[in-house]
Length: 182
Image (cartoon, rainbow, N blue to C red; front, side):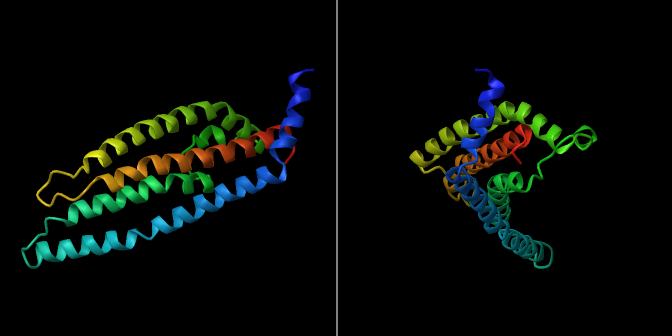
């Protein structure tokens, strides 16, 4: 039996009700985690405005505003990856990519998927290792304010896992597009 005969059956199995439910669940989690963390922009703006007013109007800068702003922006960035993948808004070489048909773009995405997996896998592995170490010693920043850094570091493997799951969902979608079941 040839590979071309096996692939349609495989895709049919990938498009079963359970798989569609799984893909919808991944999309739901990616969408809502992205939306929830996007609301952190409001505190970022408020902290910056507060710091600017204190620093330049009252000549009394804070010791905490810069780190809070960095923490919040890092949380938005880390947890926004899966949402960006869900919306298909990650950077692509549009000069070439946009010239292909939907099927051609899906084929290109399938070819580059192993590189995506290597990157996200490394991020997941290294992020989990770093977060574990930080939690074990209850790591802080070491600055004058000295807040804990481990809560933000815990988001790195979580964000990478969500990105990997959303990438897997896109891979299945691309596979069904290339095979022609969509």
